[in-house]
Image (tube, rainbow, N blue to C red):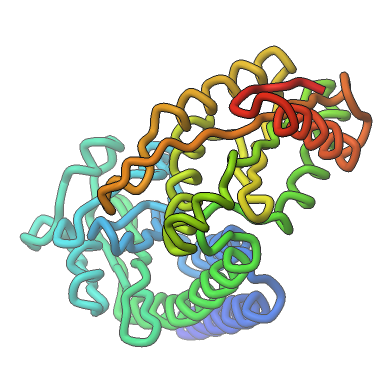
Length: 346
């Protein structure tokens, strides 16, 4: 019997070392947050084998925890749900930044039965550990066993805490990388994507459109007489107008569309799965939104700004990304050189 216990302990130790090694590898092999979370999921399941477990990330802005990873029979019910920082075992761990082992939740007032009711699962034992980096709690890993499974032990808690330490480093690295990536593709004045990102997304969307046979449209527009606004009201006012223009643009676009500040006072909208007729309708909506908006009201000005719009569509007007840009740009210039404040199609 002792030999069997020793072999069991040895196997557990080997599994733990393997898990730490695998998570250590991910620290140097990927900076993609989804890959990081996927690998953590695999290692927790392999080493500790809980009936159910979850990885929750802190949404600091809303003061909530979000179920990012859920494993077990009721995983689909939990994914994406939110809890308050002060709710349940996970909420307590996030708020206090400390590990909590609860062999029997019926004797712990911190336990919230809300998710048992949602998943139709009866929780018996929980161990939850914080993922902390630089004094901040990034999230919580929580393991849950039912009445017919063994209660978690102090050793489980120590193992999970070690995995959480690795996980916190990996998540922080991935987030920092994502922030740097965003800085390289976002325009500082408007918060829209910049021209660098346009080249990438346009190539991707043209390739996807060719594969599935869906149309792809571009709207290219340029603010009318923007130089005179800068000359009259100053460059700070001009920058504020560009920022407001970006906000108006985003409010008019669909979630699948991509808004881009191309440069200066030029903007581009990438419209996947959109025909020329639909793109012209969208351009009309954008034009009306701009005309109806009063700019710099916080400065007591309430300026009206118009723009010249050009529309082009794949495959009607071009068979590649570069030509699609040229066609929409040329259509815009036809308006710019004639009436302004209008829309032209390639």
